[in-house]
Image (cartoon, rainbow, N blue to C red; front, side, top):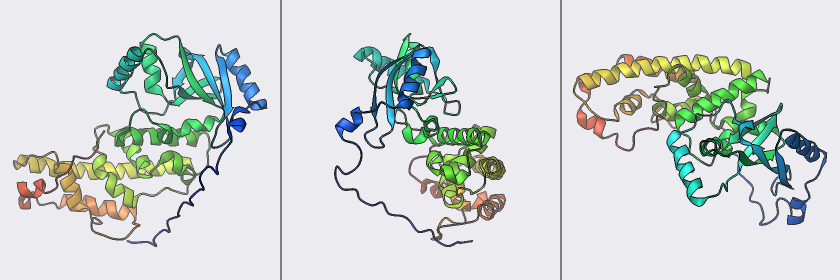
Length: 317
């Protein structure tokens, strides 16, 4: 089952103040691309308030004001949290200022924000006419959702659904292999979990995440092919979830009560729980877990066994 261990790469330490632009270089941002994008913003009813070169990467950034109805969240990101939107509305009203511009890209005449949907929705509900943002010329930044997000931490379900939606969108664009987008997707298991969540929103994906992190790697196939493979793996995960669900139901019927029943069962049937190996075959591990769930003897489980699991219940979303 075990494969050859991967070699971890170490980051080289950069000398202090050795990277990026000087203040004068940051100020110098005018080029043909900036002028073209400025004209587009003006044509779209917006206004460019200023521009600069990013102090780290040197790429141009425009500070813009746009009609609020012209900006939309990217179509593959999570749905906004209403409680979080309400909290933001309260803060903006109390401070009397909108001080956190959105990150925005322009793509085919549309303005998308990959980072800022909660702020956008809050301003809309407050009745604002205009929204400010940092307009980035490179439209592929729209796929850096997870790395950019700073306003509300994602849970497993939100991350997984965003990642599989991104994968589908990139596949339609013919954007290379799955492994080429490891940064955007963050973790391979999110792709499998996302495909599973699409079929079953009530899936307790957090309970399977730790197992999947050890057996699910990024694929070197094209995105179109890898999405189909993720759907296949998701089907197997849902089959496992069905088997685990039956065991949990049987334990409850026996009189056991605990928020940890599902993680308890998953831990008990996990064949690699104590293994020190670093790589495993996805199907082999999943098939063993499904078989173990089918043989699970609930009569041998006591309440104190479940109590030993302890800790916080997994992040289910």
